[in-house]
Picture 1 (cartoon, helix red, strand yellow):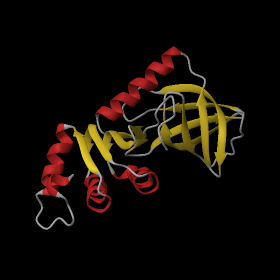
Picture 2: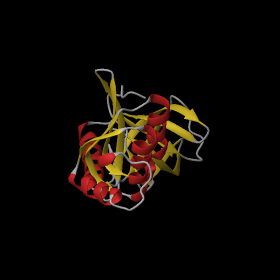
Picture 3: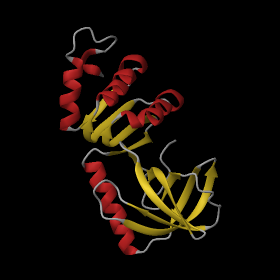
Picture 4: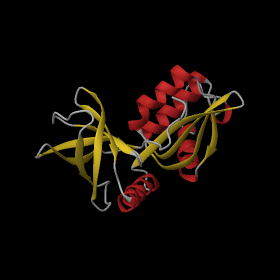
Length: 201
């Protein structure tokens, strides 16, 4: 899961709806994750690989984004699609992603390796939606440090993940944003917090 993608995929704290046009029909779905180049969506519509679809969606309060795409993968009702966007839709998607990350309503988790050490980097919201990716990185890849400098909002579920990483897996907390540092200090001040090393690292 070391980040190889050209465009990072973001996950949302609240599922975002999408309208899909395919074969003369209009259907609905939800966005599982989004990047500048495409998205993963879940829908009961029987989409077909290599076929073009129309996508219309909004990310929280963003303007409506209307972009053609091609279906590139399918697992049951989960489809991967690649955008065929022009410069205007790319700007709209980029602005929507940045606004969602800055508000903490969306999250990116990546793992980077430098000098033999693996760092998990979280940008945007530190929330429960990251649990699957977080635990996969922690238990399957091995992580030495968590970089939280890009965190813009913190939920209790996100703090719980960090407590598991530090107390059970010996992971160090690295760079911290002000909102994370404040929430982390409060979490560590709770009497009887089990298994934390001094300073939480």
